Amino acid sequence: MATVVVATGNPGKLDELQAYLGDLGWHLQLKPGDLEIAETGTTFLENARLKASGVAQATGHWAIADDSGLQVDALKGAPGLYSARYAENDGARIARVLSELEGNVERGAQFVCALALARPDGTIALETQGICRGEILRAPRGQGGFGYDPIFYLPQLGQSFAELSPEQKRIHSHRGRAFQQLLPAFQQIRLD
Ligand code: IMP
Image (cartoon, rainbow, N blue to C red; front, side):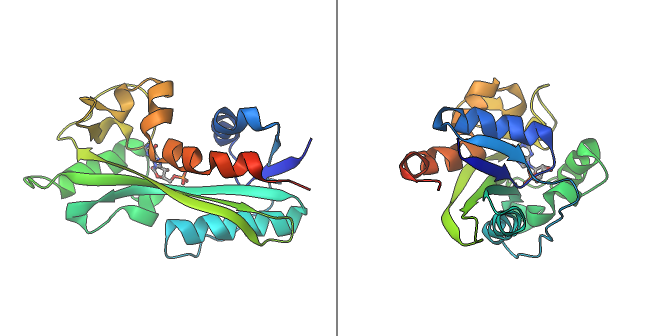
């Protein structure tokens, strides 16, 4: 079975990727704990490429990486690449976005997920970007998910990301879309 190293040290992320890639027969493995790849890119796609490439070269295996975040229209795309670092914790990050948008009627926003698969020599074999558009609520709603989920609302479903079941989120989310886009190519590729 071909090994694909996931460019994350987070076992939760490995489980999530397993849910998308489970049927491919790949053996997914966490990256070595001491291997850090600097995310110096200026776009989500550049960071996904850097992580996939760096982990592939360091381990000699195929590697898959994703990079994602929230872009708010009225904040000129912030928090964007800084989504994970916008404040100390999820609650504070949500509070910051809500306060920066206070009184603003323009609520449009999108989640973006870039995905890259690198060959063992570090070259990129496949890449894509999934986008999910929605609106920023005026107060958090829902208990599920993580990160900015409670303030990201999908008008077509009438629910926030935090109110979706994991299956619904897999269908509609930026990450789900990115994986759906690459799945046919993943099924074709020969990992040897
Ligand atoms: P990463 O690419 O998984 O490291 O995600 C970067 C940051 O973007 C996370 O720490 C979250 O703050 C935010 N983010 C990415 N995807 C989601 C999502 O599906 N829901 C909520 N927040 C997300």
